[in-house]
Each structure stands twice: as structure tokens, then as C-alpha cells.
Image 1 (tube, rainbow, N blue to C red):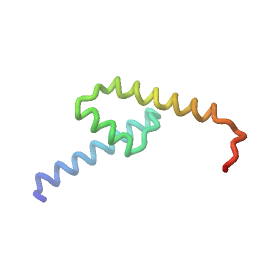
Image 2: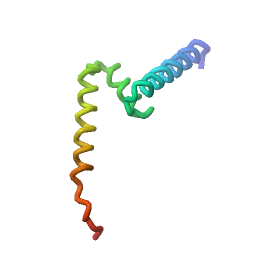
Image 3: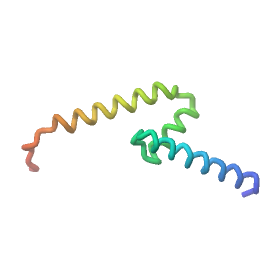
Length: 76
């Protein structure tokens, strides 16, 4: 790898670490893998506001599924 490529990789890692720290400070609940996916989607042209809305909706559906789960289910 060239020194220029090494510098780019280092900058990308540093940028990601800063974004991850901001994400944690804002209590987004995104882990590193999910944040990486979101960043890649934005780089591909997905509107960040739409992406945020979709993530919120997915979380609502997940929360509702957990809340509505019958507690008397027994494994077969």
C-alpha cells in the first residue's frame, strides 16, 4: 500500500471514530456496524432524513412486537 493510500485509510478510520463518538453522544443507539451501513447508504445517495425516519419506524415495530408478545408461550 502506498503512503498516500495509508493516509487515506487512516483519515477514514479517524473520521469514522469521530462519527461514532458523535452518534454515542447523541444516544442514537447505533452500533458501529449499523452506523457503517448508514454511512454507506448516505454515500450512495440515500437521504439521511429518510434513513433516520426508516430507522425510527423499524424500532417502533420492534418495540411493539416485544410488547405484544404473549408471555405464556411454551416451546414445543
